[in-house]
Length: 282
Ligand SMILES: [Zn+2]
Image 1: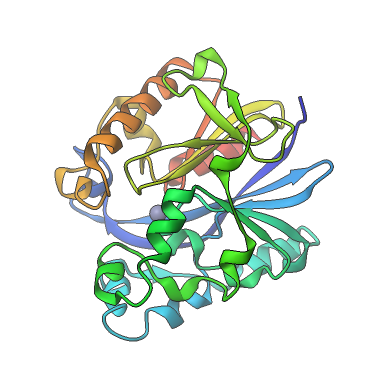
Image 2 (image 1 turned 60 degrees about the vertical axis):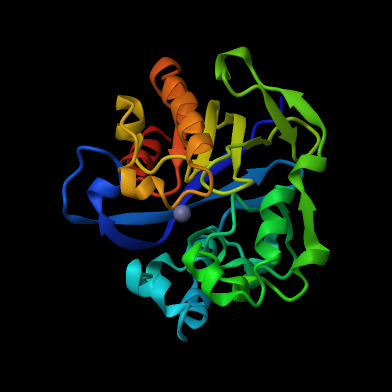
């Protein structure tokens, strides 16, 4: 099995009530970091899983109604957290990124896509179709957390469907998740549908990341401690999900894995505790 390396980078953050991410949480605003994965594959080079925030996010939310997004979820992107700055710390320029795997099309996950001129993109077809159909429907897009202006102009020529990749059986111990899409053809990166938050949210299971199985789960949950406790997001927060019933099913499946398979690093996109735990263990 091909092993890859994985760094988890914090690229900006927004503030929201803690109780939105998990029942029993405080009615206090807390930071929700936007995390992205920087992956090095021994033959395929450098890839990203999402991009977090970028300057494009502020441009895309300058006008109304898109500004509602920024008002509802105030965003901070300190200079040191800008993705290009962090990539430079690894000796990389944006043109070194060959692939960006898109978990889903919310602004906090795709704001930097325009910054990677050589990248091809991989996403689940249902999400790509839903997102591109929102072009010109500004209110509907904004209320769904979508900012179509964030896409590069040639995006549709550069995106591939994850669900067109060969299917692989996932390890039995990853049940109830059974099937992954072999994104690079060598079973090193397996795209796993995590339905509910969006129509086609794409998780990423890495069988061997620095010798450890790792599961990047995007917004299938927002707090690793809550996932381990089986505490769902607040009822209000459940309404931001495209398909609530599927969200709960996906959440419950991940909750079983987080409790049962403690060797697996389960990494939500917005959980500071998971980020710190992963960095401490790496
Ligand atoms: Zn998100």
